[in-house]
Amino acid sequence: MRIIVSGGGTGGHIYPAITIINTIREKCPEAEFLYVGTPHGLESDIVPKEGLPFATVDLQGFERHLTPRNLLRAGRAMAAVVKAAKIVRDFRPDAVIGTGGYVCGPVLMAASLKHIPTVVQEQNVLPGITNKILSRFVSRIAVGSEAAKPYFPAEKTVYTGNPIRRAVMEANREEGAKAFGFDPAKKTVLISGGSRGARAINRAMVGVLVKAAKNPEVQMLHATGAKEYDDVMSRLKEAGLAELPEHLKVVPYLYNMPQAQAMADLAVFRAGATGLSELTARGIPSILVPYPYAAENHQEFNARALEKAGAAKVILNRELTAETLGAALDELLADGEGLRKMAEASKQLGRPEAADEIAEMVLELAQGR
Image (cartoon, rainbow, N blue to C red):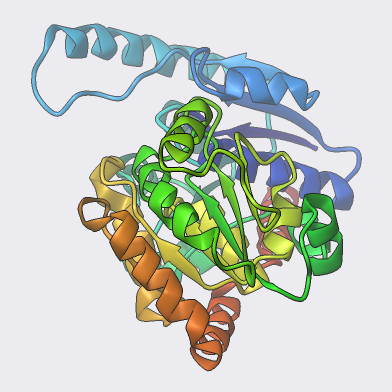
């Protein structure tokens, strides 16, 4: 069996794709894969390190108004369609999966026109334009949220949830607390703005951490992002917190995020679909600060869906300060019963079995050709 997987641009498209690949491999060890991405996106670094064959299509999204760059990109788009068709023709896949990003467009379209089974995996509550267009041609759409279903044809749309790494569910609280030198009996808050960090969250957290230094009963682990780390530490020093007490830890990056999540009672996150899927799979309540410049503001739609379900509190980027974030943390941490109900609501949204469902869907389509 031969399968093409395409997804690019951000980790939110790449890591779900890799999770799906690994899950299919468990069910069908003889399966062969080809990953198709762009030469400029994160996938060009991440995918080869996973030991996966990697092909590229040079494609970029269009700006929302007429510019000389759009003319150049239009030319690249036409060339990308031709190259994608050649990749599909040469590899001869039994199925093609797209997990998001502009690169999926020509790859899935080429496969659909050849009547090869195709699957789109849409992570967000508000789908992107590429997946909306592709939904008319592909065989199945696997959505990460119930709220995304109305945007797609009902007869071929399935709510599976978003695929998450097995390590997320395998880590336990005691193991996580030990890894970070924390007490597993104390309430713990995990703060992360994603792999690159979030400046707005980092700046607000400076004031929060200064105040939290006086309360050893609440532990905090704050991942700033590598480029933001020195700035955060400098600001903490200026605020009089040159050395952090044992119950507070600030790190540039979390290589062991599953362990950090395993010990968290509350999280402060952006609202990317993959991060939210991991939080809900573990039943972690959250304070969400949607990235305001995400395409079509999809992060706010993601965050509002969790808030509506009672699993999260939303603070918009423009409203985020040390005071608003600190007040939200104090309120939630002081209300044990309220936090427990939020955790239950979060868990009800979680779909830890999503990767298995998507893998079974792909295999069924491929074997039914």
